[in-house]
Length: 172
Image (cartoon, rainbow, N blue to C red; front, side, top):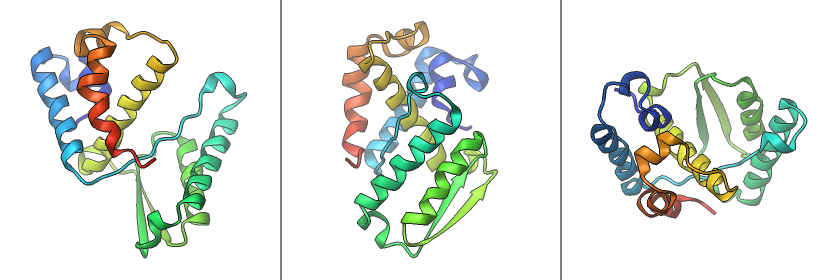
């Protein structure tokens, strides 16, 4: 079974017939995997409320990625090559990722059209992005929606039981 954080929380797709308890077990198994792994992550945010177009969002995110990699060249220095797996879900993402080639100093190969169930790290990325999205919405004063309330309880429970366990994996 493929893990997809949004449908687990909202009880959609292959998780629609599952109880909250079973979906919670699946979710917290992914959380445990992230906590025990040696992976690290960084997220970049572009809020569509403050930009005029999708092109500007792509440009802002591409510049943020390039700037981050230029400030931290040691992150990729030990790698002769890097594979970037991309599911081709959003056209702008490929344009953002092309910025990697320019600044990382190693060969970057783009592997497009992959499916999440084929690569666990894509599922982990989806999981982390969902957690960071919820964190961002809470920071902006946007309350939990009804699915999040049923799944996590309160924002305080989310911060204590989920967010604080993922934050130590953040690069910066």
